[in-house]
Length: 302
Image (tube, rainbow, N blue to C red; front, top):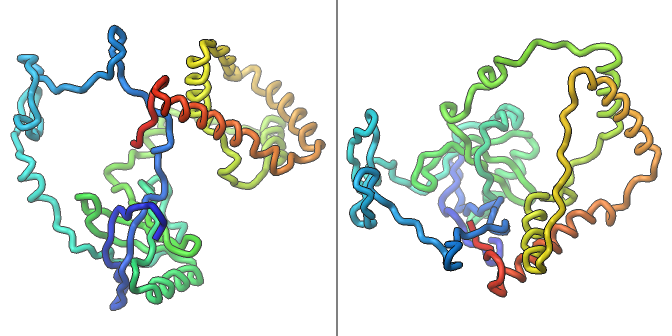
């Protein structure tokens, strides 16, 4: 169990006639992002959200609010929250594996949110047996259960010492890729243009290391908060120019030359590769310090 982290869900993982207690923990969180409150410019006070009637414009208190399904413009079927709760499938707290499939069978466009799946107190042997067997068989598992008030399909995969469970989007929730690309022109790139593009790719090959990725938006927000505290203005970033079709070959040639020169240089050390991430952490620290002093927008968990 991760120290200081509360389980999002606890239940039973069942495969065949074997079962073990498990717990789900959030694997990705946005709570460390810088967020802003809405402020009244005239008073400097925080603004509260108030629901109003769309016709009368009168405020509607929480106890007078209910759910509604629109059947046509401005016409609603009223549904009480109790009726919604009654319609939700009851959770038996069992995450039952329905099938084992090759890991590559699930298109990642169906991935929703990842959670760490760990053994909960008892049942560590059964959990480890499942994890190791899945690793050796190179398979993932499809399971279903009620999570967070909805019936959900979950993809379970071995991950480090435990398992990772990713909730999956339903087919109706995933938009068609054919429709997304239907207006793309049919182009076939050949000759020098294709060779130059392949050359650029070959000189830029690397490995996936998320520790070297900079969240430039978050760093820019931290710099903005710091600049506001110091009464300074930030320089405007340069606009990126999109290559025009008639300039594309020239841009590819220039890029290929630049990539070749870069490939001839010694590789950056690990310390240099992480410099950007260090700057970002430092900038976030400034913003966090400013927020705690009350002089800047506060950071809040999402």
